[in-house]
Each structure stands twice: as C-alpha cells, then as structure tokens.
Length: 385
Image 1 (spheres, rainbow, N blue to C red):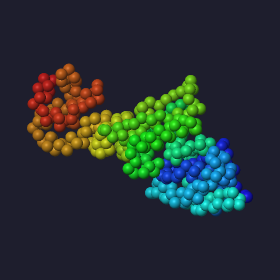
Image 2: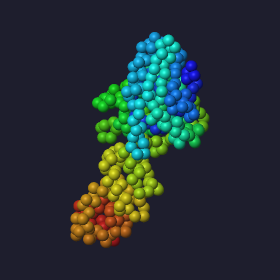
Image 3: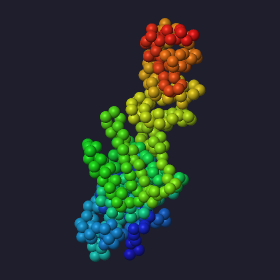
Image 4: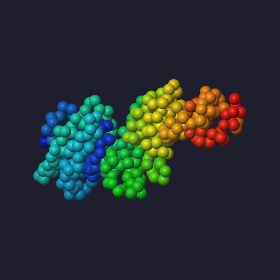
C-alpha cells in the first residue's frame, strides 16, 4: 500500500502558528491521529493523497490496547469530520474540517484519511512560522487539554528562546478568557474545574511525559481571576549554570484587549509598558483606553511621562471638568504659578496646567483636585513666590 504512513516516536511534527492558536476541540485519540498525519505531510504531496495507518501499529505507538482502539475508530473519524478548526486570518476567519473523509478497511486493518483541501495551506505554508516538536511528547498524554496545552506552551517557550539559547525559564501572562476560547472550554465551566481538569491535569501530564514543565500563578482584577501567569521550563536546559530568567516586566503577554491598547499608543518610545499592564489589571480596559486616547490628544514633548501621569491619576475623567475649571476664578489665580516649582510641606512640586507633579515619586495631583480645595492649597502657592 503506497499511502501507508510510517510514524514512530522520533517523527517530527511541524505546525504553523495559526494552527497552534486556532480554536478547536477534539478528543485525545483524534488529536493524535491528526498530528500523526501532519507529521507525514510533504509539500509535494498531491492534494487528494490519502494517509493510511495500520491500526495495530498506531495502537502500539500510542500505548493503547488494539481492541480498545478499534472500538473508538468510528467516533474518532466522526470527530474529525464534525468538529472544525477555526483560524483567525488577516481578513476575518476560516472554518474547515480536518479531513474530507475517513475509511476503515477491516481486512487490511487500516484506517485512511484525506486532509481537507481548505486546510492544507495552513499545514504547509512556507511563509508561516512553525512549531516543530517530536511526536513522542503527546503520545502518552491522556487529556485533550494536555495535548493542546503542550503545543501552546512549547510554542510560547520557543518564541522567546529562539535567539536566546541560554534561557531556562520563560514567563507568559495570558488572559483567562482568551485561553478558554483557544481550548474551546465549554461556557459556564467553573474556574475551580478549569484549574483542576485543565491547569493541574496538564501540569502533571506534561511533567511526566514531555520535554517541558510549568508552574502557574493566578492574577486577579478586583476579586476575579482574570489572567494566568505561566512559568515554562525546558527540562533539557534546567539546571544550566548559565541560566537566565525573564523578570516580571519581561513576561510575555497574550491578551487581545491589552495588545489593542498597546497598538493604540502614539509611540512606545520610553513608555514603560508595565505601567499600562498594571493599570489594565487594576482598573480595566476602559480606564486605560480613555487615558491613552487623552494622552494621544494632549501630550506634547514628553509623551511617556504624560501618559504615565494620566494613567496614575485618571486624567481623562478629570478632563471632563476642564471647561468649568479653566473658566473658574480659582484657575485664574492658579495659572500664574504654571511653570514654577512649589514647595508644599517639604515636597517640591512642578506646576503645569494639568497637575502638581512630584518628579521624585513620579506621581501627580490633578488640577481638578487642587482647585476643588483651593482654599487649602492657595497659602502654599503664595508662600512659595
């Protein structure tokens, strides 16, 4: 049989980033079948080529009893036909079945698949960045989430260490809901169950059967867990005397809303992205968005410092009072001090049209708060003349 596939533990799997981050849900056996097919794909293969396995050989490869595997063959093919892969594209999205058909031949003891033509470009596109790994890393994983988590974590690790071969640990912060979407976790799935059956289960299985392992931390926004921070280790590099780890501010961040905020910055020059991230976790998307928009509109020379103060003091909200502030008699008295340094209770503040700024602590008191309590502040201004 010319189309008979020969897969062993050392076979290498090559998956595009679009495939790794695609949204889909397959049972573990279906995932292993489709991954074995991908390991055998070649760019010169005809579009209508069938890929066939001896069921007995595949059973031995994945460590399953042959009779049990036979029982699940039909449901596995049904999974691959009925549960499509969803890929985000530059223009929108594409949804495609993994295979166009599957056939079991009892006398020959083989199962054959034909890859969906719509999917082939995402398996063989030379322009895409690929994740490459040995198939043995997923063969003994029992949970479908463990298989997906291995590929996602391994991809994150490889991204960061591609040109930094001495790195042992990579940190990655991901939005919980974003991770659930990629893994196709059912809506209404309690976090306690997600932690037990996805995070902890994957943690145990990856540690036992793959070349990576990970720890994780829960990050809260208010009282709600909104992000997970992963610490990913390559077992082959662990213990190296030259190990380098990424600090908290260098952690990779995978959060669609946060990325949108970063993309909306007028410039990233001198901007401490950790400030944006901290404000995002503490106050949420809307808070950060309005202050970035405000800084984009009003900042002149020092955009980074202006944005930092806006995020710290929520200048965008304060700006709603601007018309009444700048027309007030209090502002007429205040504005004569703009551009000067004012000493207040031993602290030297720089006075500008937006705030009293403390350059030592990089904090500011918004002008709205100052003028609201002008009777308190006025003597300090007058004594600093």
